[in-house]
Length: 161
Image 1 (tube, one colour):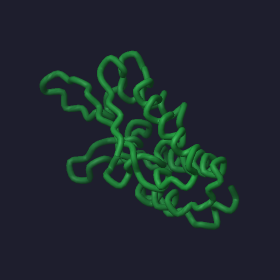
Image 2 (cartoon, one colour; image 1 turned 90 degrees about the horizontal axis):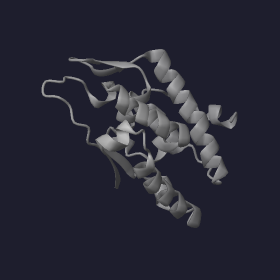
Image 3 (cartoon, rainbow, N blue to C red; image 1 turned 180 degrees about the horizontal axis):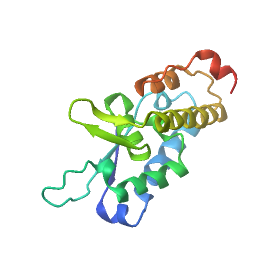
Image 4 (cartoon, one colour; image 1 turned 45 degrees about the vertical axis):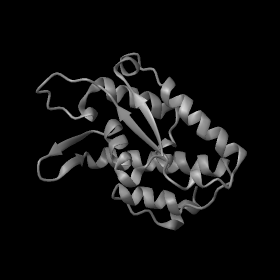
């Protein structure tokens, strides 16, 4: 497991260098060994060190500066969710940075349904293209990823891509 550490300076400057260094290293490893299990196993998580004033009730995904940092990262690496440790909730947290949502005391995070559907489909298109560029045509993990966000995508759909 690899952790990308973000601090206040990176977030305020919208500096994605800490993530870029880690992700580019992973890409180099993947390029040198296409059978590497890293592409099928989760390996990234974020440690976000963003100080808040005492009593600030906002979650990190409700802070505009933090969300903007993730928007910039996602623009450069739209396939990134595929290599996140999404089984431990990292994908949901990543999605929360990019998809409008609210927090409920009974249900936890509640995404805007239409926005989440667009996010999921954008990721399906981006990730399936990225996988094909690497000669990987197995969509099982991508299907599992979408299921973790509440979407069941038929295997036949991937034949259209």
